[in-house]
Length: 614
Image (cartoon, rainbow, N blue to C red):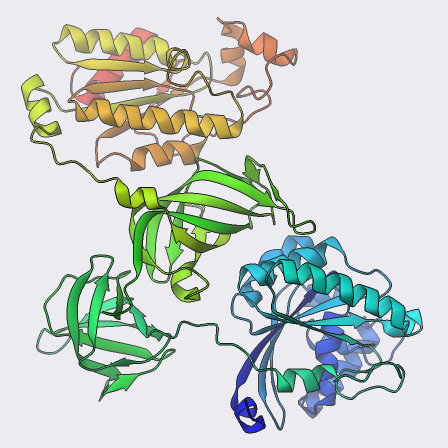
């Protein structure tokens, strides 16, 4: 690529590393010495350096980026600070990412769109765990270019052997992660050595400065070369025409192109294109567009328009790499919402394959992913999605996971491939359905889920309800927690992961029984709100009735008919709900039964009235 072509390129740069490695100082120096800091901001920097600086009153360039008051007071970077820089050769968007472990998600945000990652290493400390973690995240997001800035070389006497050892160790590690190119530069960011101009302090180094290297980088495109549109909204034109709107990604889309609507796979042709309300013949990736198809096909938000010759994969089961953000660990079996481009779909973590050790790069056996850990997993989605492997199309291969209860982002991931077994298993159409079976029994099938602490009275009340239903001629089945663990779930213990799988299996059994036309009574502690909500989501509107058997812990422990609380208090029953494992009370149960205010018989009658069978 010639110099003029490089100059026209826009480069996204992310600086990361461990705390106090000098990221903000390095970028502040770049901005300041490149002459891109306004006079009023320079004056403010001098004042801030006196009040908050760490250099004895001298200009502290890190404060150019540590804009939050909390950051200046603590001397750390919390948020991702973005700055534009334009030199005579190139334009940059530079992000200073936090070094603290608790802000790793911020670094992931920056890396997801970066062309180059600057990894800073304190020469006196060498490669640290956070260095390896940030490098693994960069590799996970497909960044192929790393600038290793070995900082604070002035404090180690510009030791060439030390620099070579750090650079060599890092290159070996990065190569194993698939990072294609690492350029190592010795710097003293606080003094400006090798930041913008090359320094004479290290006569053994003849390479470029940080800015010189960034100006010459030939960045590989991160987006797909295939032009696509993930539909964000469907608009109606003045004559009723349906326009599909969103942001084009990848390469070019043109009028009269043959396209497919994924995941349905329906073929059509682009009849018209618009950008900003004006007609055009073609559009490029990155533009907000609207297009009209020649055929009146069913298209909605979350569908993808792709060239006919470049179909997307579709599946409801995918293998992924995950970076976990949440303080509550990821556990196989738990449900979340997956957001991929403009599509949102319910998802269950079907299997956690491994956890990645960012230092040794070994896949470790794991049943959970803790805060900031990276791992491989398989996801089972509620409906098929159209996707591309992340390495081919980051927009249609990268996703986030959202907690369905708190609506917080708990993880980010990259789709590697769909699972072949998902393509080989299809629903078999049957002539006899649930409606026919229910009509034969003369009843409305439902799942009545009794939840509460051990000893609350769930099984007692559920048993009374079933007896009354049976006496009235209804067809029922009672799934009791203890009974199910003798057979179907005898292989499961009482860890969080096993509890989640326990409830998943019971939910699916209850669905099958309801499909058979039965009224299914489920008596399970079901301690986690997320799993109860996940169970409800597997049933149709009105088919799932959550009954909270509300008994205070002290009363349940006083009853202790099975002697379980006594064992738990003695430490003989670990992970016992209410003692050393949580019970999350329902917040919106369909029915609440206060066992201190009425007998089991009266409460059973209340359930029957709610079901319309009293």
